[in-house]
Length: 525
Image (cartoon, rainbow, N blue to C red; front, side, top):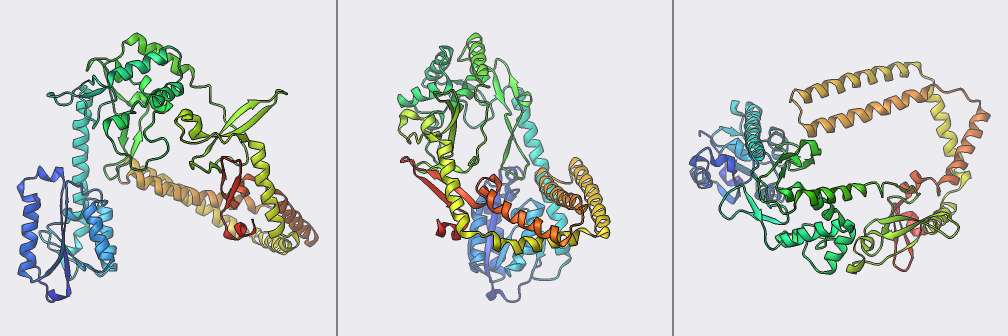
């Protein structure tokens, strides 16, 4: 460490320390105390003033969403810190993209000097060590990727052997008191599980089973396990039909270990992706069963027979826009036949529908047609006040003339075709980079979506070029028709409704509240 600091009084230093479980395997030299001692020795030698010490113990370097790292960033934003010192570059992070972002962009933009002691990196001076920093970051990233593969391989091997590697066993089981990676029957929860299967065998639907358990105040799995919910809602602390359905189809209850239902998208991300059933890891006969095979088979057949009873969906103008004013959840739509045998759609509160006797919300039942007509009537009223065909006509005429003038351009056609061809080749190259491992899944999806959207836009432009020529009189007539059609179709055009309306709320008193996306329209309403 031959770093020199000529003006130590100008700096307010943040000492950053990070240690993950993987780093602990590298030996005691990576310990928090060792890092802290080395950093403190450096600042004493150079007479630097330490603002604070930031320690993230047990946090992976592949993620920058660490509590003390984010606290340090907040202090930098508040101009309390203008120098960051770490033992080495890997302590800052092992994701070479984000590490490069902080070193090459964030720290310089915020006038922060970064020093890595063992690597000899100092962004405050010109040094050859700074030039090879990107390569060090890539090596740290590759190390993290290699560790991730090894851990994943070990976990997968344990799954294939039927060893439980999850955090909490499925409801009805608990961890073995002495044997690691083994589960045993939970005597307190097991009777509830057996009762649920018996109720299903008697013909009760999943919803009815959930309603009965809620009426009896039986704690659901999350509450029983003492798990906290980050964003509690009206369903929190209650059984649901989805929970019951999942339990009735879980082979864990017949003694089979079922794991691998979801996998992490990448070693850099905490998000998980659900796996198809054929990709699950199922090992038979690993623990004592709660349910016999025959009961499980019959119940599963009953559940499967109901899968298509609610497969029909209904289209209506306010789809996705209508919500319950009291609980805030989207309203459900039911189809009922009237005395004349006609199908009639009704709105009903989804919370009330799922937890009728829990008293969470009220029914809100009302005809879909009634609400839609009220909303359309209000939008029509606003459109008549706000929009005038005569005022729209000059705009429509200008747009028609502009479009027709732009279309008469043969050179543009050739340019568009060349750009489309170039983007297609680029998409093929990006896909090959993904297959070869150069691009991870997140970066591939981001680049692929952006380039594909750009290509689609160019293709749409190309299809619009081959248009007939219009005389001035025909252009004026076309503009007038377009302006009139625009005004007339606003209330019934779903695309325009979505553009105007943010959400529609229905109160328990059957009042309709419309929330527009633009304040000017709300003022008129």
